[in-house]
Every structure is written in C-alpha cells, then in structure tokens.
Amino acid sequence: DLNAESIVEDLCFGPGIEVIDVGFAGVDESVGVFYGAENFVGIDSGFLMTTGLSVTTMGGIQTGADRPSNFVASVNNTSTASYPGLNTLANSDVIEDVAVYTITFVPTQDSILFRYVFASEEYPDFVCSPFNDVFGFFLTGPASNGNVQTTNLATIPGGTLPVSINSVNSGSAGNH
Image (cartoon, rainbow, N blue to C red):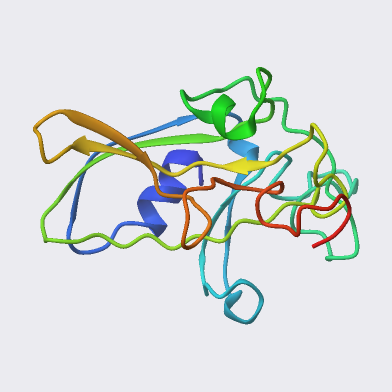
C-alpha cells in the first residue's frame, strides 16, 4: 500500500543520500507515481504532487491526473497544508490545495541531483490572473558563513523567478 511517505522513499533516493526523515503534509490522494513518461515529460518514472487528485477515484467519476490529456482534472484536493515561503512565491496571502514533502537528509558525496517537471492545468488559461499554481523546491542547510540558509531551487533557468504559471509564459493572459 502506497502512501505519500512511501512513494518518495521508494522512488527518489539513490546513492549519495542518507535519509534521516520523510514527512508529508497534505492529502495522500494528491500524490501518485508514474512510469513510462520519458517521451512526455523527460523523466521516465517518478512521483507527482498535484493540487487535485493523482488518480481517478473509484466510482467512475473521472477526476484524477491520470485522465487523458484532453480532460481537465479539476477537483481540488482540499488540503490545508502550508509551508513558509509558498505565499511569497504565489504572491498571495491565500494558498490552497498544497502538498508538502519535508525530507531531512545528509549528502554522503559532494553533490546531489534532483530532476523535476512543472505542469499545471491552469496554464495558459489563468496566466496573469490571481490563480497562480507555483512550485517551490526549498533546500535548507549551512551557508558558507556558518548560518542556516534556505534557497528555492525551483527557479526559471538563468534567473531567480520562481516556477509558476505566471513566470513560465510570455507575460500575456492566455498565451504561452
């Protein structure tokens, strides 16, 4: 039986990382696994975190992210989870339907690698609107001066803009 913690533990950790703890805040149904997606998202297998439901619920109502691409998986997951910094990324006092992993680990080699893909069913329809799906990938650890530092690794390549539907577009509503 897969739950949010076991999904990450089973799929994401390889050599070079000593995992101390995995925590999850949100709704278990907002997290799922995928396989055979190299041609679609550039990553063969992994896990997804969604503001909706990761898979269609039993009972035949097609609500999950596993629907064919011409359908909209628009059932919110109703999570009340949060994380410091997400409001700033979303440029809003209100954030909804959040899934948050908190992973405590110690690197056992001199570098670590994370690969991710950001996607949103609200793109491009809600670009430049108050509805701004965001993705934060926060790494907290010691800075060169010995203080603790938190950095959002999910930024637009070549800059410091956070990854969101309002930052991965041409800047015009409804355009990409």
